[in-house]
Length: 442
Image 1 (cartoon, rainbow, N blue to C red):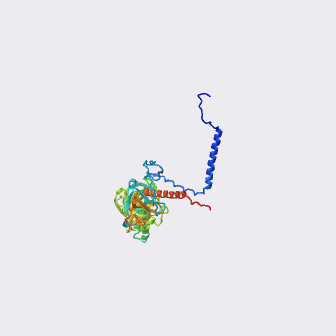
Image 2: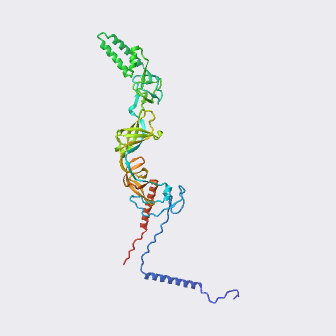
Image 3: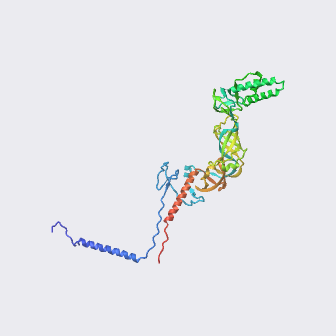
């Protein structure tokens, strides 16, 4: 043996012998464990430990942004805030929860509250109006004899005309012939005035006179024809009312015939204001009711009006009824097709009033959020009456002195819906994770 090789005091067993020894030890351990399991009674499964609820974060301005870690809102880049644990958030309104909003967040979203007060309810009805011409003050200038327009005085739309003012002069061969017949009848009547045929001459004169009058020949024109005996070449048509030209289909030199209406004149001294009143408010509108109109053009100036007509037919699409109001326009300041606001005066009564923007109307129910103090807000379903300006009557659901959310009510509603949905999801998750009671067989 070389001196460099190490020496051992104990001999090393072969590798196969060592593997055999380890296998026997492992087999003994498995057998011992199996025996212990056979000797033990079956134990009830251990109750599942509830997992700790994960902290969620939410954007204070966009409540739909929720995530399980801190960060910023992808819409407005604001820092997300922790969502507080929902405790005692149930309410009497389905789908909404009582929520708590800290003062800092109230200021951030612009939340405001207002008290419910007693006052005069149902004293007025507000509606949007559109001015239109009074249909009873529109005149069509028609022609009863064929001819040609030689001179047009009303030569453009919008031109004001006074009653009796010339509109246009018409040359008509039939008019010239009728004047000759009238002069001939007049001479015949004078010639037969002393004889037995006087009556026949009178009938002929009257027939010629009536023909000219039916063509809208003025009586003064006939008187001048009788005195002078001169036949006029043209027939001048004059305005029957004072107003403005609102339609014109004729120019100088044009040929017109019987039945045509080349001009239209509208008197704008009185106008109609068409208002749309909702079905629920129709019972408080009566003919003869006083009203006030306001237009942005004139600032806070009010124009008195009166309800003149209520349409007997309801519009099935908008569920409104057209109400016609009459308004005086002696100075011509108001123009057709102007839009404005109308306030119809109705009988007032005592009731509870709340801000109009505090009531959230979903179509099937109306909800307000009542301030309970300490930042808590409870949803409550209410029944409302007619609105009066910025106030609305509360018939059921609130009491005088209670405070309701009047600013940022939609944000509070969104938060309440979200909290209610999260609470419902948490309850379902807890019910699903709850262990069932073990059953033992004997």
